[in-house]
Structures are given as structure tokens and as C-alpha cells.
Image (cartoon, rainbow, N blue to C red):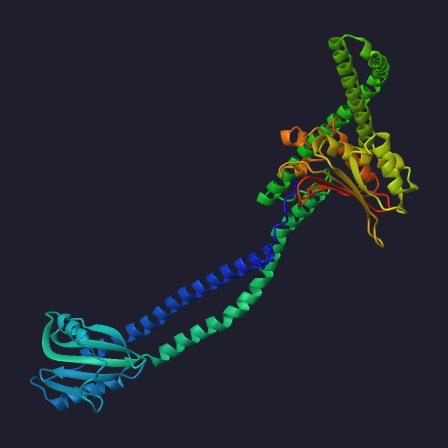
Length: 488
């Protein structure tokens, strides 16, 4: 049974998918690595700036002294002094004391300092800090309470806040992002090389396997694959070789068994010919004297004579088919009048009154007269036995390089669709097939072999008006092999 080839359509090949998968993994790895590196570096950069600023602000506040109650001017001077000492970047310092507000800038308060930072600063004697983004600019905000005594943690009521922009750190971080983006494409381009090498190493065994399977499909069962390495692909190659060896052994055994069966059929047929010849001679004599016998004996004699004739035909058909199997059948082609050859076939078998013929005169072709006689006789005999009369034989000469066509049609029930593919099989056992087979079960198979020997085709179908139609096409003057067709 032949299976239709699977169409690949627009789906990319395995090589393309392997390279794409490799590049996808490389891209995901690069993006993941860059993201983790960016996150770690960003945290390190911001933490370094943050820790340095917080520690510096805490040290500067420890050196500041306030006489309480204080004034706005005193708070403003303290803010400006602290702002000048700001590290690692300049600070904007703001002070709060009760309702008094002062800063190192022209504005006494800042929108960057949040209420959350104020609450934490008031609650924590060691101060607090917060990173804030305002209008797209990142800021570090620090809040520290001024203490009377650092040991007893007595608050003075003065709270100082420092605001430091992190633009420089943002520029550094953005430079890292840009570098990661710029390095991603070259990294992926470089990854193509190992992807190609990996795809090649993976696909080489697959290509070898495909070539080996194709070679085996063409009948070269001794095909093997070279096993390299010890991975899964090597296991696959090893399994293929073992399967190929087992298949080769099985096919050899089947071929030997088939050869023995054919030889047995040929030998039996040869051995049966001699006793059958004697039996046929006896049955012919008995047939001639049957009219003088009593009715029961006469029926028995005629039955024996008929069955002996069928047995003789079966033996002849077995010998004929065995010659085809042994490639010993020869074609003795001669230029003949095709219409006259068909008429002689019908006359020899006394069918001329039961068959309608459409045989134009003057059609000549290079065919083997004896084998062509067998083809016509088998098809017409099959139609008469299993179809319904009238049986029609049509001859259509080929035009130009077209084939010579002989068509045999009947008006019977036709051929079942399930039987059509097997109509030319030997001894086909389906009940429906028996209604269309020749007497020995080999007639249509022999017809097929004779048509093939001429380089032609024979096909079976059902006519549009009912009945079976067998069509033989012969390329006049061309000898060779051709396939069988079964059509509806």
C-alpha cells in the first residue's frame, strides 16, 4: 500500500527551526543576564551613593550646634553650611523647627520631601532616607533629627532634610542599558556561528537516516548508517541498522519461500500435464459414447469430462503464470491485422454469434498474435460468464502516437467498488471478486501479464450505463512494462 507524500507547505525546515531555537535561547539568556546585571549594578551604584550621602549628612549634623530657641536666620545659615559640605553631589538642605521653615535655597520647603519621610524621620532617632522620582529626575532624600544627646536620644525639635539629585548615577545606569542594547545584536550575530555548527551536527545523522531510508525504499536493503558517538542519535542509527538487517533477513526468507512456492507450482503443473492428457483422451471418448448410456451415467460422464477440462485449463494457466514469474515469458511480435485477429479469436471459441463487434478494417500493429488472442479470449470469456449479454468488443486505432485501444463491455451488474483494486489479483477470494474472475481464477492475472509484456495497460471500470468495461491500451511497436490501473 502506497501512502501519499506529506506536503511540507510553508512550515520552515528543521535546520531553520533549530537555528531559531538556538538564537531564541541565546537571546533569552542574554536578556536575562543583562537584566540581572543591570539590576545588580543599578542597586550597587545607588546604594554606594546613598550610603555615602547618608553617612556624610549624619556626620555634618553631628558637628552642628543650635541654641534653642532658634530663629529662621540661624536655621538658614545651618542649611547653607551643610549644603556646601554635601557629598558625593551638592545637597539642597531644608530645616524644620516647629512652625519655622528654612533652606539653603530660595524656597523654604521642597516638594520632593514626602510626608512618609517626615513621619519616619520623626519616629526614628537615626533618621531615614527615601529615593523619589519627580518629573523624571531621581532624587535621594535624607531626613535626620538633631539630638541634644546622642546617648540619651533626646530630640531638640530641629529636623534637617537633604535632597540630592541622582542624575549622574542615572546617566551611568542609562549608559549601562545602552551598552547592553548595543552588545545584544553583535552577541546574537556571533551566536549564529555555534547555532549553525550545532544544527549541522544534529542534522547530519538525520540526513544520513533520510538518505538510508530512501535507499531502502528503492529496494537496496543492504543500506546501513555509519554509527558515530554514543548519544541518542547514535542509538537511533544503531537501531536503524538493526532494523534494516532484520528486514533484509525477512525479505530474503520471503523471497526464498516465494521462489519455492513458484517452483512447486511449476513442478506440479508439469507433473499433472501427462496424466491429464490421458484423462482428457478418455473423457473425450466417454463424451462421444454418453448418448448410449443410461441418463445417470451419462450425466456423471459429462460432469467428469467438464471438470477434467477445467482442471486442464487450470494447469495450463499455472504453467503460463509460472513462466511470467520466472521472467521466462517472451514476446514474439509480428505485424498483424488487429480486427482480423480478434475475429479469429471469437470464431475459434464459437462466440461470434454472442458478441457484438465494432472492428474497423485496416488497423495493423506490432503485437504477439498468440498472447493477444489470450488477452481477448480471457476478457470476452469473463464477460460472457459473469456479465450479461450483449457483450461488445470495440477496436479504436490510435491517432498519431496514441495507443491502440481494445474495449470489452457487458451489460451485467458491474464491479463492486471494493473489488476494483483487486480485480487483476490471482485467486482473489472475495465473493464479489469471484463474480468477475475468470474460470481458473488466473485469467485476468494472465491478461495483465500479457498486456504488460506488450508495454501496455489494462484497466477495469464500470460503464456509465451499467456493466463492466475492460480497456486495453497497447503502444503499437513499443515493447516494455507498464502499470495496472483500476478506475471507477
